[in-house]
Amino acid sequence: MAALDTSKPSNRFDRMEWAGAFGDLGTLIPFVVAYVEVVKINPSGILLSFGVALVCCGLYYHTPFPVQPMKAIGAIAAAQAAQTATITASTLQAASLATGLIWLVLGLTGLARRIAGLVPRHITTGIILGLGIGFMREGIRLMSDGWIIAVVGLLGTLLLLTNRVVPAMFLLMAYGMTCGAIQHPGSLHALQAVQPVLHWPALLPQALSWHDLIIGTTLLALPQVPLTLGNSVIAITEENNRLFPERAVTENTVARSMGIMNLGAAALGGVPMCHGAGGMAGHTTFGARTGGAPVILGTVLIVLALLFSSAVMAAFDVFSRPVLGVILLMTGAQLALGSCDFSKHNGQRFITLVVAAFSMWNVGLALVTGLVLDRIERRGWLRL
Image (cartoon, rainbow, N blue to C red; front, side):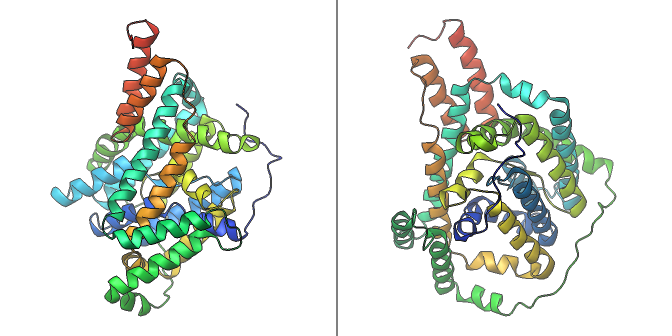
């Protein structure tokens, strides 16, 4: 596997890159909404940290390299904050700090690639397949809130998916905003009343207590590590190098990238972030082929953070949830299609399917289960 190449093609900023830039909204929007509404995080810091990370990744990798919220941390934070108020903005800041240090050390020491090298390809294939199916399942759940809206959006997307004159994502976003405005006119009125106001987030982390550091590290950062290794290191490296072999990356590079951007998030008042194979599938499904797409999305988020942070929730409320489901469904299908090169060995195919099933629930557990089953299969104890 080659290191990052300095001869990689230039980023583009054409209409397809613009369309592909918004292909990963299906994971960004729900978690930002949860952080802002449940945990009471300032949206300005979240958007600014995501924006800066996306711009940096686009300029460095020159591929549609995604930046996403860490899913396990987001789910735990929302659940705990709603039930016990244990999770606060300071706790998440501590989690970002701990996450950044963990992955920076793993990347700088080379341990990330060594650990990833212990995972056979049929396990990686199962992780990517399970993530794809999981995205599709979540997309179907959102689409079920308005089947007629969703089916119209899906058919239009399929008909225009390869059209480079009228990118499917542009029409899908316009359709989603229109349907949402008709369904929830109050949200549209709130959005129209917003005025641009310059807002600078705090650029230095606030004082963290030992309680914040302990809770952020043990309850949030450490449980995320196996999930991050499976999806945000192994799977994204596999997906990037399959789609863009001339712009290959290594697991160590990806680990260092996550370490740096999470330390940045801790400084900007953001939340823990990662890369993800599903995010790359989202960008590429709708036309992105270079780092121009994350640069475009990152720039939009930076502008929103600095000038329109008060309008973020209003904008999210307007967008139709069934149309958001269409985006997730298409993203998941693209991701799952890329993992259909199964082993010809029955035992390895079985492990791939089991890992895929577990990945729909918990990628970290799927990784551990796959490694255990692989050891059993190598010893000849798995007879199918």
